[in-house]
Length: 165
Image (cartoon, rainbow, N blue to C red; front, side, top):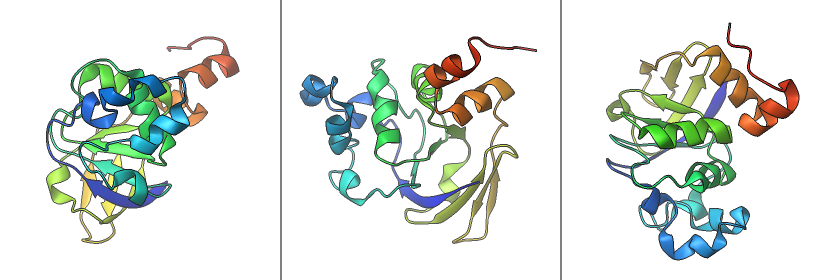
């Protein structure tokens, strides 16, 4: 069970919003890069995010260039999951590979600052603040195993390969 606060964004948050190009020189230093996460969408985000918080967005989150670091620095900032109405496919895959859950649901029902409780196995989001419950598509078993290991590399180190049965 994941618990945290919703930090809300709108539609079309690109990988440039997540990690601005002016910080490309920090790609080899992800912890330093994480200090600038989502800076162009909300200059206060890195200072206010707390471990366990959730990024909640509208449509087309993570669009743009395939910056693997975008998902990684969101996770490194302490975010436990991203909830969005829709997500760019390459960002979705990079996030899972980094161990960051991406949940597709109707985020219009979630307000900035709401306290959320998420059950990844059941596919539910409970908004503790307003009492509403949302559903998202259940995460396939292999993806849940990757997330539970902390990402694709730890999964491969632990299991050596995929068991797709």
